[in-house]
Amino acid sequence: MSEVIAPAPTSKSAMTGWPKGLARRLMPGLLTLAAMVVILLICGTIQPRIWSQGGMTLILSPIVALAIAAMAQMVMMSIGDIDLSIGFFVGMVTTLAATVLRDSPALGVMSLGGCVLAYAALGALVELRAVPSLIATLGASFIWLGVGLFVLPVPGGLGPDWLVSYTMWRAPLAIPTPLVTMVVAAALTWFVMQRTQLGVRFRTLGSNPVALVRAGGSLLRVRMLAYGTVGVLGVAAGLTLTAEIGGGDVNAVPGYTLTTIAAVILGGGMFTGGRAVAWGTLCGAITLGLLTVLLTLLKLSSNLQPAVQAFIVIAVLAGRLVVDRKARQ
Image (cartoon, rainbow, N blue to C red; front, side):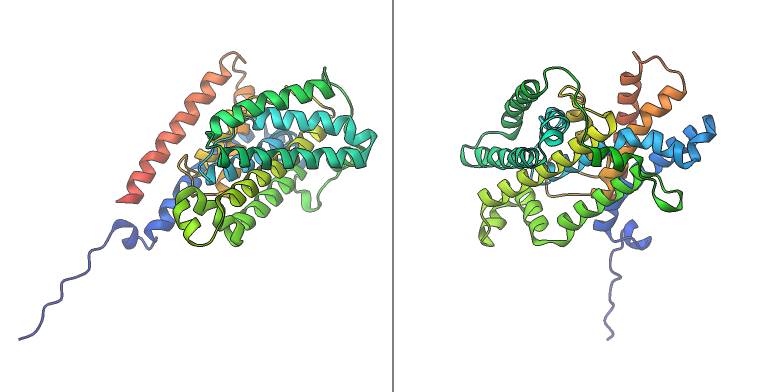
């Protein structure tokens, strides 16, 4: 008597050749990438000069600092925390760069290093005292604001010459310089988060801290390293913002706090931690930045732009939920 072997159950993702886990990780970012391309095409249709190297440089320059700050927020969210102070931290770095770093480079480098150490200490506070990251970073935002106002009470100062020189550099092959900066930042962040043991520990802390402890990891050390990494990326975002605005202003980008969270979610990140999608976060930040350009080209009132931006972001997030649900099936 021959044995009848029942066929193995198949899923839609298996039928289409996409591993289920891979589909769940890639589809949200691909949806955001598609939205970014559509917005860019519409902008180019309205204003064809955008397709030139100068045009792309013009519209992408204000997005560089946002993209790097979004990378910082992605690292924070990968460990299950949320940073509510990244906007004022980036603003504070601009005040240091436009004053101390320009007048006394050695002292400026030390002050920026101190900012990174302060972030690492904030991580220790969260871990040792069990302070929710929302509370700790919200309190830290007032510290960054106070330090920034002390260093530079009113917007002003001047960026270091080497930062200004970088903004004047033109990349070969007509590649927009801001795009080079953003891709390099995303590639480095991706390498750390996906190809190093440190990145694995970050994501394990966000998804399964018990497993991290059983593997011999220290929750305190890993959280401090994660917060320190956020500080490094925050300093990088502040320096690029200084190059963009040409000076320092602690109140330059308070809106980064929520915008960076939206960029991470658009790119495939999660509030629950354990996931870091650098290229998706980059696409999310560029998409949010291009929305402002698109609404400006459409001559929409600046009073209505935040509402329309929020509506588009909600629509994209709703689309992501649909994609996530289909990927789970």
